Amino acid sequence: FFLLSLPVFFSHDFCTMFAVPQAESVFLSWLHDCKAIFRGTSSKRPDVLVLGNESADLDSFASSSALAFLKYCQGVTAVPVSQLDERDIVLRGDLSWLLNSVGVQPALACCSEPDELARLLLSRRFNEAKFTLVDHNQLSAPLSDLKMRVHEVLDHHDKTTEYREGVDIEITKEGSCSTLVLDRVLNYLSSSAVKGSHRLVWRCPVAMLLSAILVDTINLDPLSQRCTKRDVRGAYSALEFLGYKTRDA
Image (cartoon, rainbow, N blue to C red; front, side, top):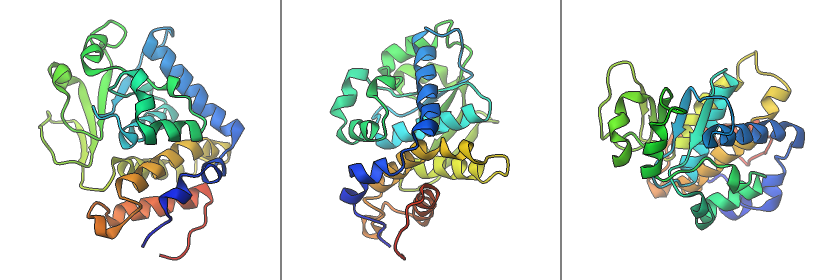
């Protein structure tokens, strides 16, 4: 049932084996565009802001980034947002290491502490954007007055708030929120319309989701009581997509 040890996964060789420079440039270019939109140096305005939780951990970052990229691939201008000071990324060891390992500079992350984010979301630049919540289902206190702008929730924690009818909500007790996002990504990638280079651009986001699943489930350890069958299926599917051969479970 164990997939591979974390030291093996978190190794330079393991991460760089996913490298497809030309394809990854699409993902990195998208991150640059997101940062420009977030800073206000782009004329574009977001349709959706994908908000990670206040802990801004690896799962939250991977989930928000991959889901926003999925929406972008589906024609929606979506920006992932992490609720922390950008300078604090270096203090998140697992997150900063992974970003560097897959070639994503921490400076590309769209970050803002909740109080500042609340002011920003009321600005003209963002006042029409809808919210997707990932890895949490209740807005932080500074954002609570903006609840009517939430149109989608993906989370793996206990449900702590109610939303109006019509909000797309998926809350299931998996080990990682990245598992929920990965399912949506893999469903999209299984489409006959997604082929060749369009699949290659997903190697970096899928590797990020996989890493979050492994960390959150303590390497898919069934004794941790944090790992579900859906987490396992997702992890193996991600590895298969990335071309990494695993031993039999």
